Length: 424
Image (cartoon, rainbow, N blue to C red; front, side):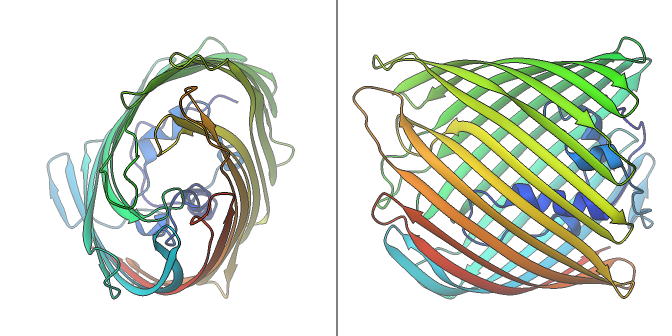
């Protein structure tokens, strides 16, 4: 089912969208991620998320009307926001084999500029203050420029982002200074009512700062493309064939080329039930070190059921391949995540999330070897409520654990916290 881009900018997330983002957040970080529903949505890119459709996209929803911006100068709207979060957690890795109890105070002052009807510029620094001396107090930064437009049967989406973080990571077992530059260009064309094309180009650079507890880290530079030819069999059923390829530089040690072939089904069974399922294989060639080529099955499944306006349930399963943080290694990660969103008493929102993942590591050169495999589970509960139209507050609890075949990377953590946010 091809997506069409709205030429105007929206504001806020539907209930469906809010916990779709939570699913993606349960990944590399040990500390519970900040809630995406405290932030302005990224409306302009919804039409061109090539290869990343979610079942919630098929069900749709009504975006929350935006409040008046704090400042408007011609076509530019200025919408600042502020989030404070207090978190107390135990079992958080401060270095491999050392799991620590700490309180964390976090402040997120966000600056959002709507640049006319097609572009959004978002800059959000964040300050993280730890009570334990085993962690460094840090300031992270995130900036993104995202936009899109339509012209006749064409859709265009473009995004550029920069993120600088220094958070405790699952893979490294310690605070890891990371800089990420990501560029995405997506182009869509509607041939007729049944046939459409999606083209996607992506560039992702990741740079890691070496430290005493993780001195064998690697930078990575990743270029990839995934293109889909969609055929709408019936109004509620679509099929697609996807072809992709990529090239990854892993520091100065090795490089990996890849090709992938996938099929995709989009099915809106009813107005309350939708499914997106894709699957295929990726063929990787290791260009250094005499390693044999490898073919790995990959897939993505997204199921969404919304029996009532106040209730939504989703299930997501994925297998992805990506550069590891450690030298001359790639990771294959398989995960399954379930979500329940329930609105209570008209104002309160309850979100329950649970997930399980398995991550295996693969050497890219004959000189490197690894047998590491991590298995982890996370579940969380979050109760939130709005106040004064522009504010939101929430209480949350998260429990996570990981067992690893490598000594020092096993942990068990529980975290509880309070969040307060306000859009000016």
